[in-house]
Image 1 (cartoon, rainbow, N blue to C red):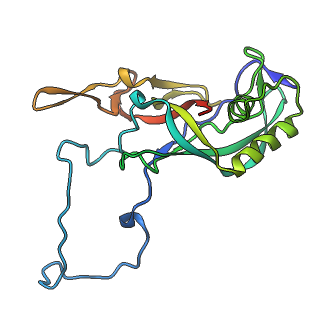
Image 2: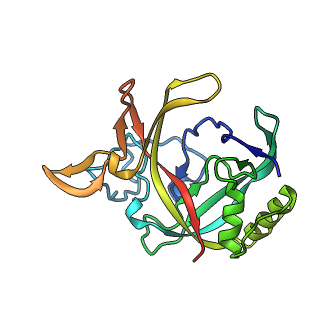
Length: 230
């Protein structure tokens, strides 16, 4: 099986986590209205005055790890190649959180970068091997890359329920190089500012932090760092 000394470089996604779809988000035909029309039906909106209306929804807290999630394939299989000419396969995957908490239930976390069959010299493993081992319970030592990809494909067809461990991460490309390397990363919920309301700590973290290089605001996203068999 081919190997590589370092992981392939991927441009960080603009967004790696999104909330569940809502009726308000569904596309409907827009019609012009007169806002002063007294016949318009009114509806009370329940809002959070302490939340940032101009930012993204906060990622699920790392304190909830591991989260129960349904794993599914949400992108095609692709073949890629490292700078050294080593070929490998990747696939898009998404974990949908399953929770009694309505704010969390249905929250989709996309695995980025896409899991691959690329074997790293530093660990002699690949991410897809790890996922298959967690889902199936088998230990994999020697296997063809096509067969390994097919095993994961078969497991994902059943949309298995797994445990996912999440980590907050923010990225700024202000120092990113042309080859995709570099950039400023902030990892871990505890590295983000503590949230205060009326001068009192809430025990939560603000999902936004200033880049230490350029000063721009960076929004935290949820990143899957590990899968666990439940």
